[in-house]
Length: 417
Image (cartoon, rainbow, N blue to C red):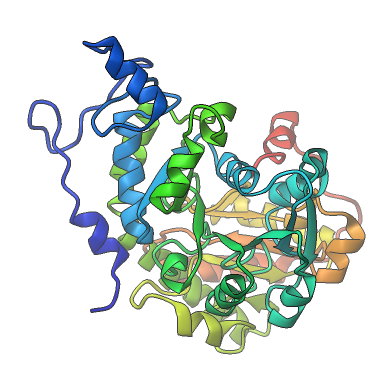
């Protein structure tokens, strides 16, 4: 039988304290012990059914962690306060002073900034290469390399990595392979393809309601235990703990993820095919002409589609800005960062979510100012939506002056995912 991440989640049963169909929310920061010796034991090692302090573990957070481990088919998982907390905690746990990381050159701007600007403060060096070319990845490996890192489908260029080939390379060199699977939950199962650690920003598709920031790290029991070790675990000592009420909310949303991903994918494919047929420069992994289409088709779990993200190339920054403003005015969606919301979201990644990457490097990888990243929503009438979108695109002419600057609150928002 093929692996089914949705059914793995549905098969979980958690009962509330009084028999409720939803698990009770544990709203405590610390926990009592009947015997002092048991507290000492929990400080030394994890003891099933015993909780010490919610920065270490919380029952509600564990429910969500276990469900996400089932989704990714890993032994264990731990949720965090953000996707970046999951990424940075993982990479710092796996590497130390003098070590090297080989990373995809096309990754979320915040991850790039961490690896480029913060990790060197800990003596960790990163080589950025094209992960769609396995020979480039192998050439970048040195005796000091400890980790290979990439996104399964890259943000924002939607490049598809052959995870199975990278995993084989990682095993051959004795390295840890870490995959950010934020763009393709359910669609891809990196652990089944050989990844050692799978990361998500739960903020996006998994939660799906744009009302919280959260992350998860999925991996082996040993690795997750190491993260929560009281003396040297990055989760325990850096403290990116998730609030239990948020964990309960995400757990409820998780059970509809498979339905939402199917609809996101169906709508995105419809939009991509329509825009492409009209002659517009659009990139979507579900189009047979798209780079990486055959790779994704070979690796993906059947039934969930090709994802909800697409790229539209408007040629220039001014045209990109203008079409986004028009689409918001036409109620197609919101000019906002992030993704995975029920409503369509669009942003210009070169000046927002990837702005941390230097101009020359963005240019070399094809991340031009005219790109519009679109997270397609759950529209019930996608045909009507795409006709509105086409109208907006056709109306765009080269502006004679720069579009008006956004309000300060929106500028602050653009610094986030």
